[in-house]
Image 1 (spheres, one colour):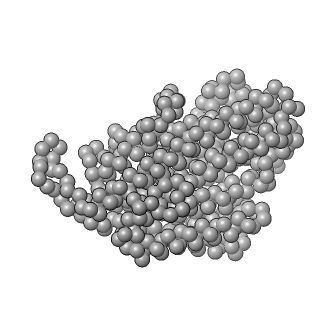
Image 2 (cartoon, rainbow, N blue to C red):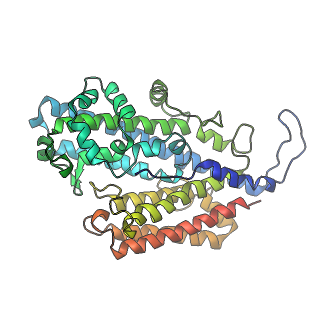
Image 3 (cartoon, one colour):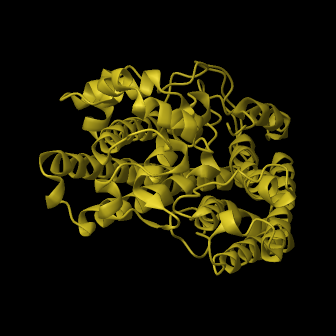
Length: 422
């Protein structure tokens, strides 16, 4: 299933309503028109935006890009060792790759409060993070020797290209890798990898560990490329090797309605060429298109679909049984966005939350308290044995859903509040 997201232009339109709240123009009318005199509040919102872009978005996407690069190399090394001599592969070799997967996965989930922009505009999020994994389709693909040969060559760039272009998004990304690396909430055993695939979907089909690892390398390479694409699309000062790879693949990095990177576009709000005409718009985007959107998805879709009985199979990360950890990281992505930095546990002075604390302490306190309560409720769910996949109707899940819904309501109000700032 594909996740659905509200597009940024909707929130830009909302932000446009506040354009007339500017203290208006001033003394000069040269070059590109009247110079805008910003209020003290608008200048403060500009500082909060700068803190957010530089210390939340750039930091997390930079770490994610580095982590997925390492993940690809680790999966590639495991494959090469296995192909050369399966008996030489130890459990520690698999465990190393699993730990690197967890690192990359955490960083991606911590980026979901800013899926607006490149991740949505270029279809990156559904390409690398669609679930449930199509196990029947994967069994067909891996048992089709002609298709398997397309991503089992000696040229990993060719293998990656085939997977990226020919395999559907239900067979790609984090959850394809998760299936190869984890089972029943534990790291895949070396014995299991050396044997033929035994999942029920592969009944009467012979697929070897070697074939699964070729698939895993192709998927890991594509995952790396798409995460590098997000990094480069936001930050034109990303590592040159990442820029070169994205350019080599001719992946889009600039939105059709802008000539700037996504980061520069946001940092250049109020200036000619930026799609953000006011600083209020950037704050609305952060709170509504970003934070509120992921809070709503966690509450009503990620938790809601299974818990309500609407779709018991709509379980994120079922093989590693890390769904509740994913949900916590999604809420932490909201925290880092509002607090103005990755891994911050208190708001930076120049942050979205810092601005709210200075201008509406009561609303800020409620938002902050509800954020902490939602995280705490998800942490309680992590104590359940068997993860979400085995506890979809547990009362703790219902409690967590209500806590995240309360946070979602707060974020709706925060977006509306910022739209009316002067």
